[in-house]
Image (cartoon, rainbow, N blue to C red; front, top):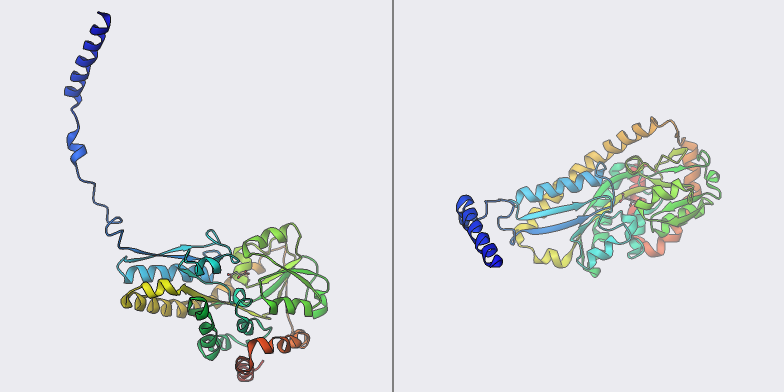
Length: 352
Ligand code: LMR
């Protein structure tokens, strides 16, 4: 009897509640609110663009600029998702990820391609480029064209070269101005036989380490120093556990902007043209701004009290060059006569 009363009370309460608050059938039948982000989401193409540097660097800013140009010129049909700071892949993983189609675009430092494509070593030669104009001529002339063609055999399309700047040397032990000052120091390098040979020729040893592990390795003293552009040194605080920096301009760090060929072939002609024109515009932007950004970051590095900065004199620069000349003979066979001649011509033209 008690159970019957309880059930009856439960049903009556239910009916009153429903009448009072109402069954919100209108809510259930209402269509979803309009969200333009969702419109045509199935048709939208996404380009995952992975890189390893900070956003306030030449490459970081160029990647974002390219992304917004492509997005606006395709009316949102293509979205370029930029992953900076190596959050998706580090510099030793990104090439393989591109080849396997796990990302569509990357922009590695050209040095990172030298082991797979030995001709690319030409860009790492010490004192290869006497001026920014020489770099530009190399990237946009025969050297650049030949190197980008090399990539085709691995299913990679090279779109262009992006600029960063000349490399400088930092270390925690002593001022480095003459070649002998490198003696027995240990440096972090990118995976490049020429760069390894360069330090060896200067009497120093090296470890290949990913870019985003460099700070930590300097901090714990596993390496004494490293070479990089002012923008990378400043933005990643690579100066923090270093006492000396040499403005040596002894090598150039720039990028190859790469896209997965299969992905490229799947795009419509119209989308390919938009990517190309956005890339051309971004390349001329980075060509103009990379120098300014590195100058600005050098100024900020000069304000760091822990850091003594030395500029090479002409005599010191000549001493570095003399010591490093044998590297040119070491790479000749790998690089080939054609590209070596191009480099020598640039040096004659711009006065090395
Ligand atoms: C480095 O590893 O030092 C550079 O490749 C980082 C970069 O991409 O500029």
